[in-house]
Image 1 (cartoon, each protein chain N blue to C red):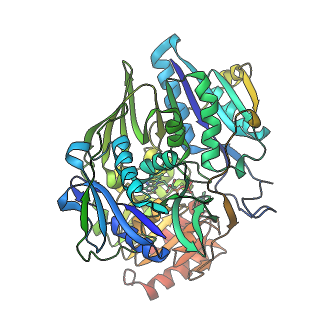
Image 2: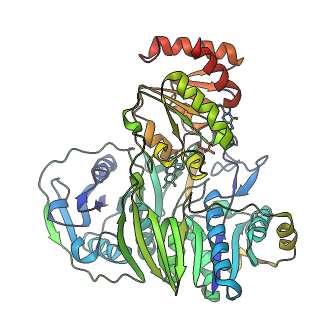
Image 3: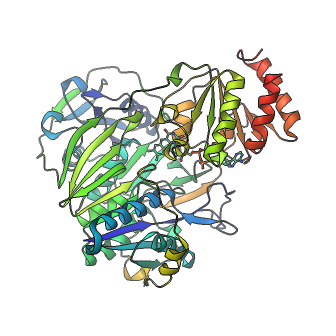
Length: 304
Length: 258
Ligand SMILES: Cc1cc2nc3c(=O)[nH]c(=O)nc-3n(C[C@H](O)[C@H](O)[C@H](O)COP(=O)(O)OP(=O)(O)OC[C@H]3O[C@@H](n4cnc5c(N)ncnc54)[C@H](O)[C@@H]3O)c2cc1C
């Protein structure tokens, strides 16, 4: 078994998540070969071969050119699987590769089960096993599901040259994240509001609870998208990563992208009316209740 | 300008899921169904573009699935789509993303759409493959995970959401396809007059066999609930008692409450 690992570079730097691909390949028992569009300074450190296409000429985001670069490496190596991170880069590029190779794609793998790939579905409530039908397969792996390998060794670098045809698409650079008005990263206690609070007026109920705890208000994404809470309080992959001593999730289902931002919390309390909500998997205590009824009672109990 | 939006009907994610008899997907009895959230943003963006373009745009909505998906189609029509295609397939849930994309591409290829919108993924399967596969099959430029969109003179200016709040700016020359992410816009609620108007709009049925020529490349082989780690404590019951229990646990187990 041979795995071609598609590493990721952003603003000139290799992303650490690329090292998760090495771990995944080891778990598969596969020989590892890497490919990336980057520079000499951004190749992953491991004892193996690396195909390097030049980001300075191709651009960091140019899907058609990146596809061509990976396909050139596929041509040379004939891997059984092409593996990417399930990231904004990976989920954008993977289907392009799968289409070109007419290969089955498996998205967001969380585990390997005797020959099958396990993926989450139904908002992490259920799991599926997928077994690609012969030939090559294109895989994306869930962030954090396979702990990153330590950078180790010196790769043999081989350059690949492909044309930089953008196929109608032009990359115009990055827009930086908005400055954070609130640094949730330092908060010891965070009480977060999820969509389960129902409407904007109810944010006050969660705010009151946060205050009774002496903590900060956080939020899941739908609450932010709806404009109920400021973006600087969003917890998750596209919000802030937090590690408080206590995290209280109010009416939050526990989607992967939310968990990614709060799973380093020391102690997690979830308040959810659904006993099966996936947040229960990471909660030290799951209170099965209507948060709008329960939060005021808890607030009062804390104030005593 | 010809616009297409691809939509999927999904179950309410707050439902309890249990495997169906075939063990490959969930049992779809007793579920409430709705329009995939990501697709709502796609429909809204397409309708906004149609409004911007005035009379010269025509917006088609397409959905693959059993009879019930007509409900999702009607919602999109009531939001402002002009007409619809229902690819009739009672076994759509067994198709992999490659097959679903092939069906859409087979339809779209004949129609020559200038711009296609899809959600970035479905809420139930979460494969995030169909949109880009359709674009690749049709040879269109495409960009994923849009949280910003504007259009002028044959070019889409888009903002892609990357990790940690960073955004990637891209421009796409038509014909093109974009996949839409949460927060791209605020989807409108269909008004009663628009719901009534939608009833008169055309929904063209096409049997899936007319469009599907591909075998599955990534079949599901089993479907089940994740093994419960079962570490956490579950508290149920009367709120005031539960609240006291919780406060005591926090005092005992954490350093934040004393
Ligand atoms: C690329 C990408 C990036 C993303 N980034 C983020 C991110 O940074 N942060 C983030 O949070 N999400 C992010 N998401 C979205 C994520 O997938 C989920 O959609 C989101 O986290 C769901 O938020 P929620 O749990 O508040 O809402 P829902 O999933 O709708 O859950 C609501 C919960 O509330 C419960 N509930 C309802 N009513 C009550 C009540 N009265 N009392 C108690 N409980 C109740 C329900 O049982 C349910 O569990 C991202 C998604 C994508 C695709």
